[in-house]
Length: 138
Image: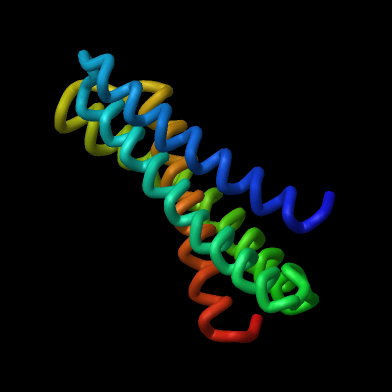
């Protein structure tokens, strides 16, 4: 896939998520956990705009949008996110069992657990990738 098409797809996906969030908030009747997940999805999509803007800037300068360092940074961020997600899932399971069940007398719903895992691990990936890119090495 050529470089311009990747940038366009990234911008379209981000716009679609933000538009979907606006529509979902307009429908109303959302609980606090659903509202938090909508804001999390918007934050992740806006965070991905950093990479779209970076690739667009490189393309305008005539530089390649992907080089060996950027591939290594994304691979490293992906690996760290994977390990983080495993421990996050275990932590959420413990928190659900020890706090929500024992203290509050209820469990987290499946949607809340999956939403938390996806949003937090996605945020971790974006944050780690931006940090490693600013650091300039893997």
